[in-house]
Length: 400
Image 1 (cartoon, one colour):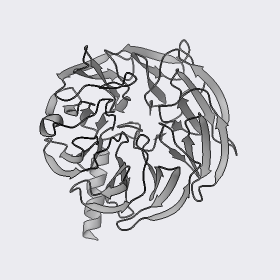
Image 2: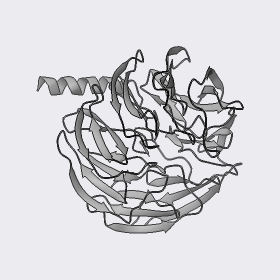
Image 3: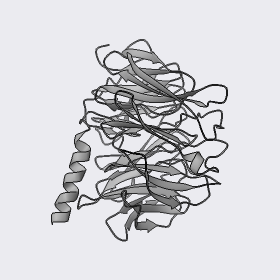
Image 4: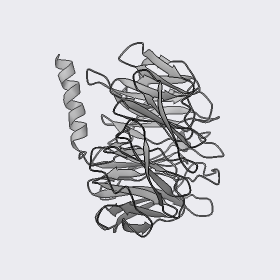
C-alpha cells in the first residue's frame, strides 16, 4: 500500500505542473481530447482567426500549449540544418522567444516532410524539442537552454533518408525517445532534468514513424507503449524494463491511443488490448478498421479511424463492431482532435472538417477551408484551435 501511495503521489506531482487546459505533447495528453470548451465549428481564413504568426523555414510538427504559451518547431537552411524552437503568447500571437541550434545528425527527408517533423513535449516546467536529425534540446519556459543531446553523435547510423517523425513523450521525470531506422535503432529514457541516459533498448532495424504512448495502470504506475513491425511492448518509463508484449505487427506511422486500461493499436486493422502489469488480453480485432497516417482516437463508447480513402469509421469500443461511416474530403496526415462532441479533422489541403459526434451517426457540420497546407495535428487549448497552416501558426477562437 505504501508503494502504491508513493507512486500515485509522484505521478500527481508530475501532472500538477500542467494546467487542465494545457496541450503538452502530440495529441495533448495522448488522447487527442480537450477538456475545454470547443472552438468554433465554422470558420475560414478570414473569419474566426484570432491571430496568425509567421514561422521560419519548414515544419510538419504540431504545436503544444503550456501555461499560456504555444510552442512549435521549424527547420531552415538549404540543408534544413538550422533548428528553431519558437514560443508565442496564446493571447495575441506575440513571439516571446526563439532559440536556434545546428543539427548534428542526418537532415535528409522526403520533400513532403521536414527536419522539424517531431512534435515537442513539456512536463509543465521544461520543453523538450526533438528533431528528425535526432537532436534533442531541453529549454525552460523562458527559453533558457537546460541541456542538449545530439543522439547521432552517440548513434552515428541513426536516421534514414526520408526522415524521422516519432515525437517524444515525457512522464514521471523521464523523456522517452523512439528512433527506429535501418541503422542504429533504439528507444531511450532520458532524465528530464539533466538529459542523462537512464536506459537504452535496441530496437528492430526497420524504419518506424509512430510515437511512444503513455499509459497508466490501475495501480497508478505509468507505462510507455512502443510499437513497430514486431508488435507492441509496454515498458517501465523509469527503467526501460519490459512489462509485457503483444507480438503482432503494428502500423509504422499511426500511433496507439489509450483509453482507461485499453490500448487501441493500429496494425492489420485495429485491435483492442486490455493491459495491466502482466500478459495483456486482446479483447477484439477488426481487420476492416485500417488507419491511414492519422492515429485513432477514442471518444465515449466509440473508437474512430480514418482510412487512406478518407473515410471516417466509427466502431464500438467494447466489441470492435462497425457503428457508422462518413466519407470526408481530402487526404489526411493529421490526427483528428475532439472538444465536447465536435471532432476537428484536418485535410492536407487545409480543409478542416467539423463533425458532430453527439448522435447515433456522425454528422458533417462544416467545411472550413483555410487555403494552406495542413499536415500537422492541431492543438486544442483554452477553447481555441492552434493549427499549422503552411508556413504560419494560426489561432482559431470564438468571437474573432
